[in-house]
Length: 362
Image 1 (cartoon, one colour):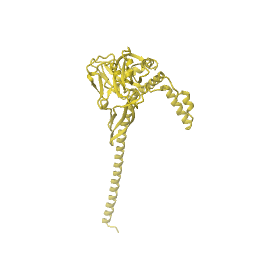
Image 2 (tube, rainbow, N blue to C red):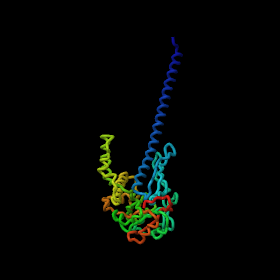
Image 3 (cartoon, rainbow, N blue to C red):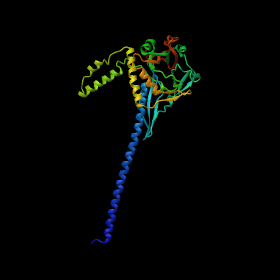
Image 4 (tube, one colour):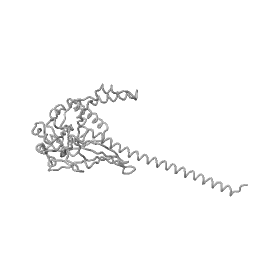
């Protein structure tokens, strides 16, 4: 027969078992909650990193004069923070030269586009701009409506560039007025490479010469056979064919669109612009945030409004007009551009001594 003491012992034992169960369950739930919070914070941080990447890759399609990239990636600085980076270069008539590395920091809070190295500072008594990181000389464009200042003077570097014998150089040419792609293709000599086309800037006293991400335009990739519309139609047909048959012969589709055909330089240039239009619209739709500044006269400049207005006014690649170009080539070949009436200003960027092993495009 069990005594009262035995019942007390049994009750205490059951109490300990229940307490152990509660403690164990609480521990499991706490660990699960901690793991969930940790995973959520990692995912949020990673998402902010992806936003920086998407912003940068899209921006590289619509801005950054003659600046391209050959790789990008992420570097973690902690479980919840890191840096997005991209290694970049410039093309000087087929010679690849280094440019500032792009970096953008991200964390659980947000992403920061504070790429200080690519910021520009005035030099040579207002005649030049250099990057903060490695002091790369950067070619600059000018707004015709803007007055010259001590910090930024309108330059005519074509006066001395032809004397830089044996060098490949990069030059920003600001036009005296807007020109169509057909006119530009006709004006640029065949022995100079047309690298990049500038759409211009709104008439304002605000100067964005020190902001590479506010210099909007597009690269002139060679032999682009399809417009953006044709490329989209091609991809749609390819996707439909692959959905029906993973081993489908796609050659007939490519032949239909002549995707592998060789096209003349003007058609390729116009196709490049049509692709720029698509990328620029994507950037506007993404609404990443735009520069809005009020000048000393109270006039507001909005990059978003300007880009929207530009797209609306320049829908047709055949009639769209542009404000300047980046040209590269042998210094001696720029002599033929001296004193031409369609050049308002010329400003040199990077240069490099041509070596025997270099293979120039022009």
